[in-house]
Image (tube, rainbow, N blue to C red; front, side):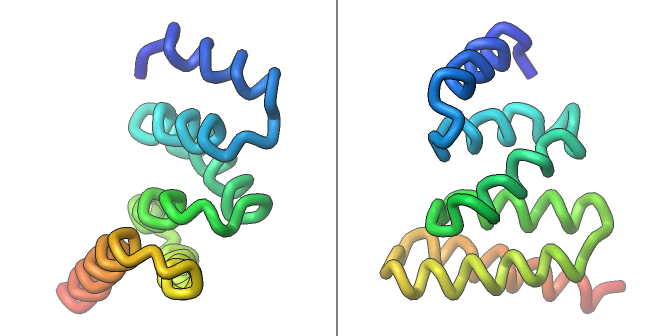
Length: 109
């Protein structure tokens, strides 16, 4: 995580608090080093910008990594439904593949 880049993203967010791309960029920047903070921003996207399809892949993955498999599954399923509704075929294929891997990993337990 580069602090200068994160600082700039927070400035962008202050200027436009409803920009889903900025919220998404902050969440992704925080993903590895501050996952709980990243969840805050993914949850904002899931609640306030449900059609921002890029959110679902990363948010579901993070929920799973943090041990909340039920929430991860819910996010995958919601994201798949939204991708289908919006006819976002590329995002749909990626999300379905990630969801299948998630289910496969669950079978290994």
